[in-house]
Image (cartoon, rainbow, N blue to C red; front, top):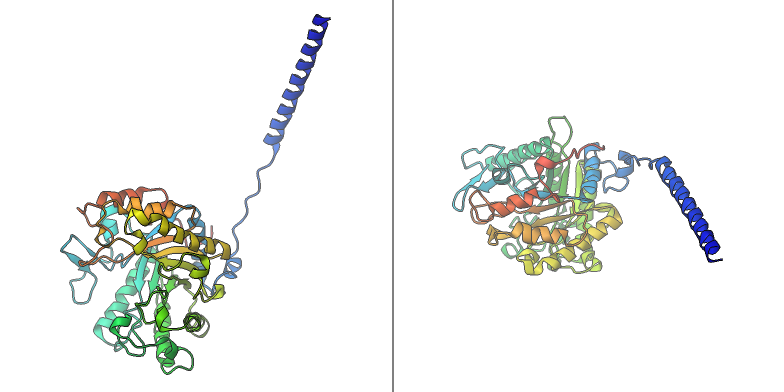
Length: 411
């Protein structure tokens, strides 16, 4: 009986094994025959426009928004303020495309000198374009022309252009810094205010300028426009201590609608960026003008990136803007940061990069401030931070200008 029992067990085991192999074979065949999932085509330009502040944005501007969102899924672009406008050759020697200085090549860039590549994002400012100068003032004319040319150059080489606006006080005609010209202005430049027409004149100057930005392809150059930034501090006349929440929101909303609807500017994406004074989404959004006026949520954060000890604090704030952008179909960016004079030689890889990679973020770009003799933010040749900056550039997560995909067309 034992042998018979063993024999039956053997037969049963063999049968189960054969059935299992057959099932496995059928499964493999089924897997091999399963057709791949069809590729989802990208949305049309009109579909993308429905999520923008400007439903009539140009094709290139619309494509820029879409492509920056796609890039942010895996990478972050590197940007530099005044990238081809000014810089430093060493600790004591400054160069600049300025009217009073010898002309410098439009191709020069501190970032390119050190890494061999331009930044992906070029920062500019409307301060010297929509300011309070005589229209035919030589310096004013020069500043507009050099900014125009450098913006077009950046576009022609496939880069992204963003403009902030350190707007001089339109009531006092003094500095944009509150301490240098402590005159309340926001209430007075809103519709019905005593200086509303002054403000509209400044916006007309911006609109006229925006329409002169034409690339070699004959198309208007898209611009990420970032007005009234760092409003959660008190250092600018539009800061939180100098206007109410409602006044600030109305100012931002009027700016977008007047440029878009009255002046016909359609090559702008609109960026909104507080400083670092938030630790939650409700705090971030206290002065938010609304999704219908904003395309990009940013933050300017220098303080939390002074050393490795506060990397997590900075990273948590980056996550707040990134999460909101994902949720609301917006872009996110670190719109200003940096370590003055790079006193920490490994700041780029051990502070900035770690802050960007601490969480899973969707941050389109990070921009450091402009290089001057009295303060620089990217290293010059021979600076102790040079090697670290090159290592930062070579990290797969960060994209410089030589790694940029086509961003002004939908794939």
